[in-house]
Length: 468
Image (cartoon, rainbow, N blue to C red; front, side, top):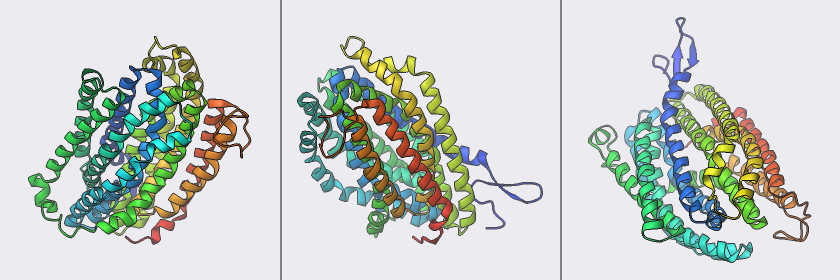
């Protein structure tokens, strides 16, 4: 290890070691582009649904984060592929890296019955939350195909692209995602309008794009160069599927605990009014321009930390992780400010000007988008530290931290601050009635606390004791 450069390392003329930020950016740039394309996919769906009506946008807002929570929770089995592949690559065990990809694929197939079970909960959930009947009807039309079919397909793609990310072949991930984004546009147009499927057509358009992306990812995984170096055509046998669930589910739960709070937060605003729900959905999709590329930088941290640990150098893992956390936080904060400055031009593009609620949606979104920009900076600290911990395989304690803060602080405080007296989901809590602006203020406080706690977890060095 002393004779060779470590991941993202450079040495000066005196032989002293430094973090090579150029190398980090070189690894992160395709991952940032990949995540930005994911944001474009989200914006594409929102834009097409917005052409239908404010009610359709509200329906998407009501169910979108719930769907994402289910996919992310079960998707941990695919996310863990990057950690295992990176550590195996750092240790020079290349066949073990491709074996991790196959383990993710088999684990993804095993989640299909679970997705079906979750699919049955959609209608009772919206009914219990007293969502408007028309919003509920449209939400369920989107829910079924997007979750039950699109969910497992997404996990399969994550498993294969997680392998590419873990071994540093991040441009292959970018190619797969770019293709999916490009074909998602005509598929949405075809399904929503040409075939007259309405909001359900947006889900089917995304499913079609995912299927094409899966075919390409599998072809790249089994390409001659990968087979030669990683034996990817042989390692499908005896894959350690149980390990994927043991390590992957806590990873998925950590993100799900956060997203579940976000889903309930958005559902509360949908319940408050159509305007609050639609404005929040638009702001969420716009700020994903900061969030998704930020995830790309953080994913580079997962790879670099994992490869360093696989090579047996945990001190270097600490140094390179610190660099990635700083980059993620700075990037997301700056982009959040840029979105706020451009909001007067951006927000009206996602509203049908002929809709009777259009002016109210634009006005409210202009107020809350600056709170969302502040949220992004501290979410960068949260994501950067969380993904570096993931590279070390440290998922259980961070997941517990997120769950306690999200469900014990964020959700109940949002309910208290947002709903007016006599409204809300329960009378057991007081109601202050500050609406969407109050709810967003609570969200900023939550993410400040969460980002700080995960950063402290990383700097404590507790992850050094973990052995996968």
